[in-house]
Image (tube, rainbow, N blue to C red; front, side, top):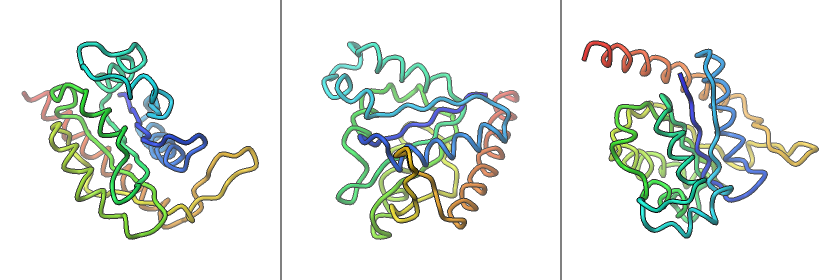
Length: 187
């Protein structure tokens, strides 16, 4: 089984990337599987110039290949001005919709206040549903104040309630994945 996380953050270090890595790590550990993280900020120069899905830069094509081979996709985005980032949308705009159909997806976001938490349900879930992804019922929205900055500059989650929510997400992901596998075998 393969788990791929997508961080829509343009910053490095990033709270969103830390959140995506945490969810991917816990899921990979529970499922005894491998994980990979795609950071949109790392491919932003190539991605931003890409306009034709048939003429993609190598690093963008590689990111799409990772997604195509994934069983579980964790999509995390910072929330700016009430929405996911423009590059996250552009990343999905260039992707063949059939590539993700039937995969399991986890929705995660970070932001400055609770006012943005509905982005997960009102914007990100519909986007991923368009691609035929089976989204995990529980989502996670984490405020910037729920992270601590480590000595090396990276971020660490510092909220036990959010950690418990992530554990619930991992359980739901594994359950959904087991249902998907059974249905795939039966088909």
